[in-house]
Image 1 (spheres, helix red, strand yellow):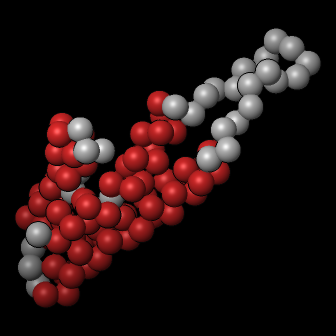
Image 2 (spheres, helix red, strand yellow):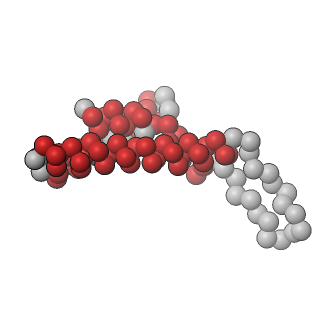
Amino acid sequence: MANLLIGLVAIVPGLCLRWLLTTYPSVDCGGGIGCDKETPDNALGMITGAVLGCGFVLGMVLVVDILMPRQEGHPVGPWLGMALLIPAPFVVGQALGWV
């Protein structure tokens, strides 16, 4: 259940990363004196959201799937196997057209 909740939080950096990979234009400045393309206004927000969001999600995975099982004396392997549930909310949202 904890990994699914982490997956819900991971939707935000997932959307930021998807925008950066699909919409963010590549600026081609190799041929001329100046660049003819400008960076979109929301690029800084998307980059910040991706970096901070991914860091937060990775920190939560570290705590929930590695540190907590070790503290309780449980094997880490099954917990890391359940980490595969983290992208499930994003994938379901994509399949249903919500995200």
